[in-house]
Image 1: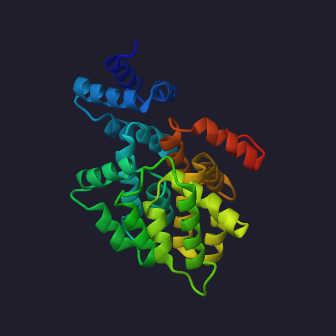
Image 2 (image 1 turned 135 degrees about the horizontal axis):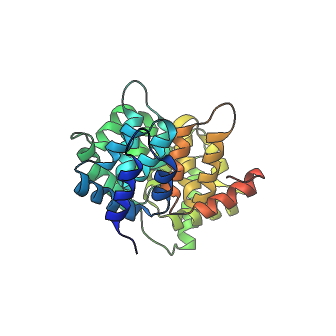
Image 3 (image 1 turned 90 degrees about the vertical axis):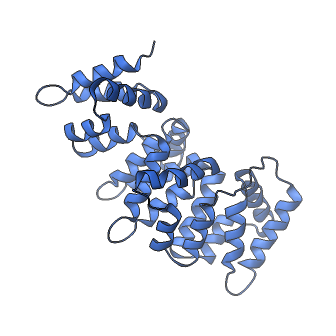
Length: 285
């Protein structure tokens, strides 16, 4: 039977003396759900008067520290801190903004907007995004942060066909692209509606809306639109491609890899593994 105080005591003992029992820390942490880990963190503070995350930071180093610390955060808090880190200091990590804001459902976006000031000394998430981005990229990010996407799970086929035609008329059919139409549709439609619109677009044009976005846009707004559509149509496939991007080539994007593994481990990791093997012809692990 799970007892957070017992597990907290195990963690305490694993970090006593010179050095830490890293195998024990890994075993205790990974054998529990996020909900249980949050209870263990609370129990640790009640028993020993210290925040477990602060203790782990002082006892560990490198990627192990980053991974174990991430696992003891609430997912909303971890997203908030990741967003702040992406916008702090010189330069902005646009890929982090895209990965988080484009893929989280309404309720998570709402909670992020609420929690962000608590975790960042009163800063406002939307204002930070506005100050760090520009143009159509900023407009779509801000729209997504309103968390006003439809929750409709039974889209109307005729309406989807009408919207697909609207996208075609605003993009591939004309000279220049009316990005406000793409912004309005992809920031307000539910995952099921976007999937339906995508199918209707393919029927209308003979190719996918992803291909249309690739043809009509460039830069960060293209990456954001692709993420919104791709992560809605097939989220597990989307994150499989992100993991491959993190590990291929010279060096590994450890922050990206850790963030995806931590945030998806209790959502769809088995499916991500399947897509990874299917797409890249090798096991992910």
